[in-house]
Image (cartoon, rainbow, N blue to C red; front, side, top):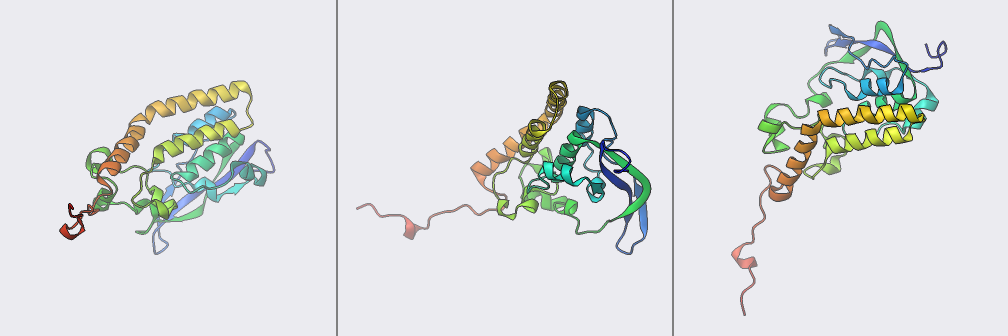
Length: 224
């Protein structure tokens, strides 16, 4: 596919979801629908994915080396696969091989299961009402972020901004990409606000489960 069409930068196969015993669970044909002629359309397809359904099967395909080098590859932030695909989409089209050649194993230790159920409350006391944010969380990509204030959704937005700025686009295509990102920002405004709420919570109360530091009587300086 890459040899046949220079405008294609990614060729990937459909996924067969298998279990721990290699038995087929289902065929996953949900992907970035980026076999489109215009950069802003491919960019929109990449950033507006349903992350609960998307398994990033495209990054396990064949990617043009020169295109991949221009993206900078993976980074230590949430949704780094979506960021990479968005940058590739700005450079060219994606083409799918309909045969399910990629085996994607479903198991209990997958990164997307890092914050299930009750464990989600360790990220925020308000998670029951506002959600927990991206999964896997920032500390999965960078362990030094455990218990620290992060703005994962703002980081993703910032990476999309940098992607448009770095892409080799004409003025009209670049303007369309900015409009696409503007609509994305409005749609994801509640998630951006959630980042701010969690940051304020952590700044005032610290991480959930943290023991407040208190001075003992012996540590209090005497008045002399």
